[in-house]
Image (cartoon, rainbow, N blue to C red; front, side):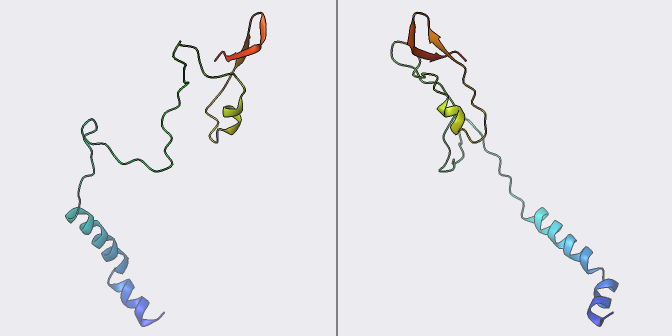
Length: 96
């Protein structure tokens, strides 16, 4: 056992380092609460927004049920169930 480790053991060095961190947090604490409707946080550059199915002006959906968005979603939260228009097999839409 070296002299340096013996001195650290006698003086409870680890406890003093922990108490220093605790005291610095207590003395320099600033709350980071935002008042949401009035203050908005800055969003990261890669934020894409909320998922939403877009519609044309007449109210019909812009989705043709091709399942490409389901395959490309990295977190696998998109699920597409497609269906066909009765009598028109070339017209598809997303059922769910």
